[in-house]
Length: 249
Image 1 (cartoon, helix red, strand yellow):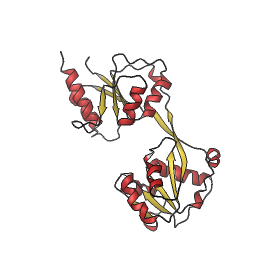
Image 2 (cartoon, helix red, strand yellow):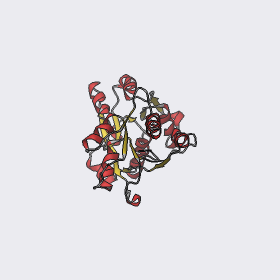
Image 3 (cartoon, one colour):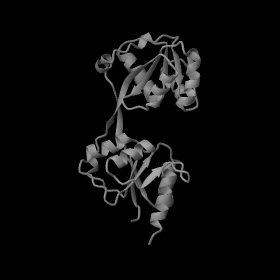
Image 4 (cartoon, one colour):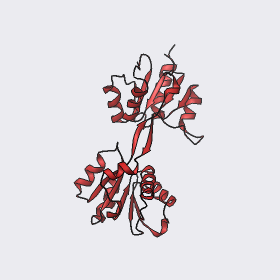
């Protein structure tokens, strides 16, 4: 079966130079983008139930821009004044720079890593006397608390936002040759929106081992798994498959 229509379960890229657009043009396929999941902030009432006192902490660990947004949102909603001496530890330089949206960057103690939490831990270990707050989603990598526990760092998890399924009712079914997923939550959203979904000839692609596991545990056939040695990105894996399928007579 030739691949003509693909649905990618993520927001449409904002840059015209996205490899997805290049993929579509080179292989004469139509690619639609639709997020299957979305992030919602935890409200103050539910946050209070966690019994976490933000002001009892001397440092915050940020693993994403979303975490930054919701940390300052909940602080504002609770009318908290964050101490100027608060230290910020960010997963990457880009995440650190995003703090400028909320604080005077040059006047704060800000540390960042290379994009990997394991590398950020090397920075955190140098400040083990701090009391760390870690804003997270209800669905997060277990690696984060595991590494903090292993290093005996004093920290508190704060669930400030959650991942929920998007409303896909306007799609009126799945009229695509291929579906592309990037998280187990995306698979859950598929069945929440389409409980009677049957794969049949639809090709399913997934990124990362956790997503691949979710696909097979849902009883679906996994046709494309990325990354792989010959295709380190999802677009590279899709191109390999499409060229192979569309060249068949």
